[in-house]
Length: 184
Image (cartoon, rainbow, N blue to C red; front, side):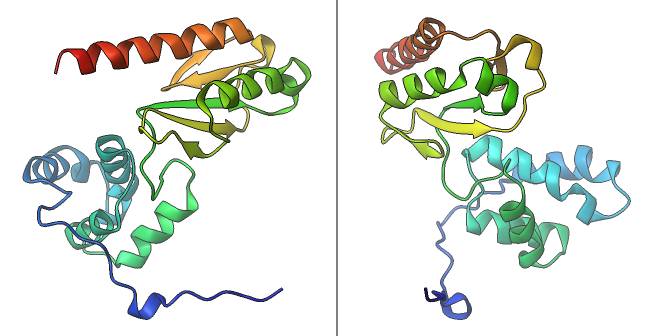
């Protein structure tokens, strides 16, 4: 086995002409986020959450913009983004399905739930559908062991899941997607 190295020192950060951190975001961070923290570095995670929510990922250009805004090193921002699972470098789907895979859910049949989502959407855990509609995640304990198996659909916890219920939830998301595309 060999170690593969990346040319980090010469790597170019992909950029776009307009900033990811808009004037409205910066004004909001200055008025509501920064006052909550003793140092600007303390505001990093809430700001990253805002960017992640807005763009469904944290682009490299946004990390540099955030570092400049907070007057911290860009490497501190990248370290935070790459450490926490909450943040992603690649765009997530508009609907994130997080299937719990810890012991209680495993015993109660999470594998059938996970397999059904994989089969319906044609993706594996930690992948996103080509149309950007869904991302499938396997997650550590969601804190509802007594109602296992459980999964999150965009931060909404669904308990005592069955394959039929998962199909219904996916169908609801697909119906909402088709309604929103038919109105445009």
